[in-house]
Length: 107
Image (cartoon, rainbow, N blue to C red; front, side, top):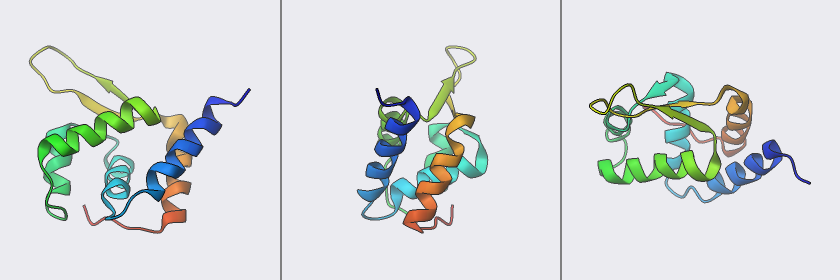
């Protein structure tokens, strides 16, 4: 049976390989830099480099959260936005995957 870490590594590698314009790498790099962020904050950082809608950023974060499994989320109350952060146990996998891509993000 494959370990969860190996599955995530494989999914992460494929996710970054399909990164045509650098947006995916930029989002992951931003998570590495800031540790915790909301979709609106992430959109503000990414929007300076990419012409992308807030809903597209939310969709990408949702995909990373649900399919890759490297994010955690919490919400303090029903009035506050969801705050996303990287799971500490996968930070090294993300760094290695981004280094192999060697794409940079100026967010």
